[in-house]
Length: 494
Ligand code: PEP
Ligand code: MN
Image (cartoon, rainbow, N blue to C red):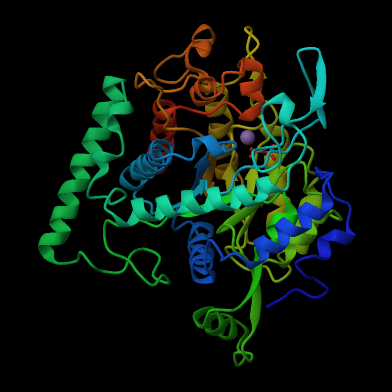
């Protein structure tokens, strides 16, 4: 049901943070017209299923894993990268499902996460000051290719489509089945103890699935009940990206009738008869979109756009968010206080979380807004290593995460999930990337240079470390990610 005074383009009357200025406006409008005619990437019923599942997360009946790259690149749209990412997300969720006995809702930062917000419009490369790299959907990493090019939006659409097509085929061809967890690249795990722990889970799971098959419950409904399919052992997977490029988001925003199950549920909740064929605006480029910490101004264009779409949304909450501002923001984007609509992604930094989280939780509790709280322990914890590489320390990431769990527990609240930047990518010799220090593989600062951002280093001859870093924030590798999964799983086991 459309919001009053809202249209997919009403954001244009507001001031816009992180705007991209295209020199070729004619070309831009041609590209946008083309995008408007292209088919949706995701469907309203998938979006509604995610909303329903997020409602379960909010009621503490499931856990949300939001993860993937900081930014995808067009070059990384390969079978190896996509399957490594899906494999890691599945392995991570398996540890939680098995250990904490919690269903996991999986949302990848994938199939559209191309744009990057930047703190400065320009950056210095060598002795030149050039426009900052804004992501593959805007301009090129090559310093000679920094003029925003509208064609890149079309290319983003097609790379998203290709990625999503491959994700869907992995999901339906057995790779993602819980019956085959060994296919999710266990060979990435070098630490013997981690490997043993994971093997143990896989064996237990395979026994449990065999047992289900034997007693004939194999094709019962999956945990999402409201969903329209579900076989024990098969998994759902959703896509997401930061909704930064509003022209693109607008072009993929389409009006659809609300699915009848949703109409009936809404009418039952309001104790009224279902209205006649109500429509809603769905952003069909991804199931879930989030507003970044740099674009969440109450009167800004991004908040205006987000308030009108039916998709479940995320909002990044950093240390500069005032408590009353947070509640006003929730009033704007979720006036009817609908469950499953808003996920707050907190990212304060390990040293700052104690100053902010408890008061944010308490303000939201007083407002009676239903939200899902998830912890992003990555974005408040980035620093430059002594060798000049941008990195994150595993122990600082864990410190923010454990503080977050503790503060929620002490505030009559619950952490509903995590938002991570991780990668299952390996280099040509089969080694994990080395971008974050620490973890069970005890990666040191000196080792960072070994396999930092392998893909970009290999892909572009013109790249050096400095430029690699502007592509992507440092990501946890496979082993470090499983370390995080075991920590959360053990916490919820108690
Ligand atoms: C991100 O999620 O990659 C990001 C830029 O986060 P934030 O908006 O929280 O800084
Ligand atoms: Mn990032």
